[in-house]
Amino acid sequence: RKEVEQDPGPFNVPEGATVAFNCTYSNSASQSFFWYRQDCRKEPKLLMSVYSSGNEDGRFTAQLNRASQYISLLIRDSKLSDSATYLCVVNIDAGNNRKLIWGLGTSLAVNP
Amino acid sequence: DAGITQSPRHKVTETGTPVTLRCHQTENHRYMYWYRQDPGHGLRLIHYSYGVKDTDKGEVSDGYSVSRSKTEDFLLTLESATSSQTSVYFCAIKPFGKMEANTEAFFGQGTRLTVV
Image (cartoon, rainbow over all chains, first blue to last red; front, side, top):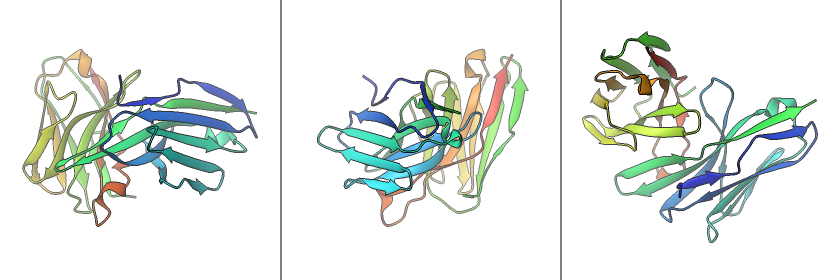
């Protein structure tokens, strides 16, 4: 089982749609959680951190459920510019072993 | 801008030749990482460093070595390049401060390496 698993893609949605991505993680030493966005042939960039109480940044909402080891990202009112791959990332923090574990990503295409 | 630069940005090399990729940071961060990204695999950690001369292996370290002789530079060497090492290589830094666990990673723009 992969340490971080994401929804299989790709997602094709019309502009204005609401879309949700899911991510599960297996390592209980996971300390912090992130959603990154990666445009084609570019480096990943942080979209948002995920906090225990859930957090919102404009049209984007992230949720964390530690008991179920589950993270989600909700995008409301999708824009063409939201088309990208969304990567779920988990930070393992155990002593000198600090690593980011990356999901494979979910591809989103927002269509006119 | 997290002050990370990778060089070269693109390289084509022949099988069996050594290749060194450079990651340079300007902000004195302790942790640096080398990843490779391939279709169907996502980002996989090759090696990481938690200080000068302190490095450790990641999940796909075979065929790679690293060196960190000063804080700002983290070098990745393919000792004898193979076609399976054709990939996009990303360097990353992860700033650590008081809230060590909850900081984002910043990436360089990547190096596209083709081994022919």
